Amino acid sequence: MHATAAGARIGPNAIIQCLAALQADLGAARSAALMAQAGLQAHVQRPPQQMVDEDEVVALHRVLRAQLGVAHARALARTAGLKTGDYLLAHRIPALAQRALRLLPAGLAGAALLQAVTRHAWTFCGSGVFRVEPAPGPGALRVSITHCITCRGEHADQPLCDYYAATFERLFTAIVHPRTRVTETRCEALGDPACVFDIRWA
Image (tube, rainbow, N blue to C red; front, side, top):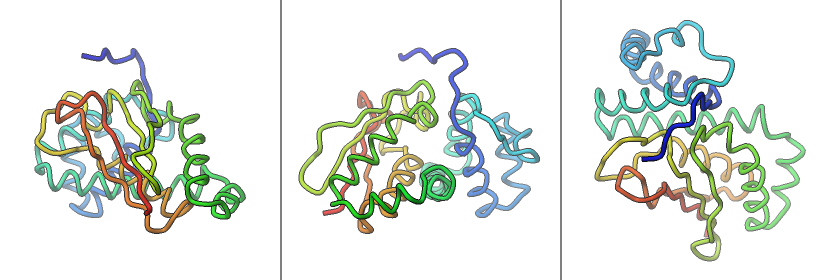
């Protein structure tokens, strides 16, 4: 097993946007109860503004799957990922850079976007490792996350990392190609060595 790095941190959107998705779907009381079960009740009244311990994110996803079922938890994670993508587009990726990338062919724009994502991977992977992998074909790119926090320690019969797939999809549809779809083709919860995401627009 990959040892968790002591004090590994991740950006607060991994908590904030999951909580927002929960509240919209289940209401304030049920959301607060689930957050408390994950040991995150303090974040309900005061959403985190700084990097959080990655173990908090691991615990939240684990509780959602245990209490709501895998299908419901995956849907909530996807909503949270889309919301995280919206936040990044509004606050973290300069509008000028977005406009410049949209002028490029999709393959070049996608590669450039992934270069920027790689430079900031520490903010969303914690102690996980983000890599750009060989493309699976034309009109496509591929990335992987090893020791992924959204499925860490889990065993399942389906991929679980919809949060990341949705975040990547939101960024790519806005900047690279509007028909981009992101599919998790391998997942550590399935026994694979890494979580792999295929990004396709053709």
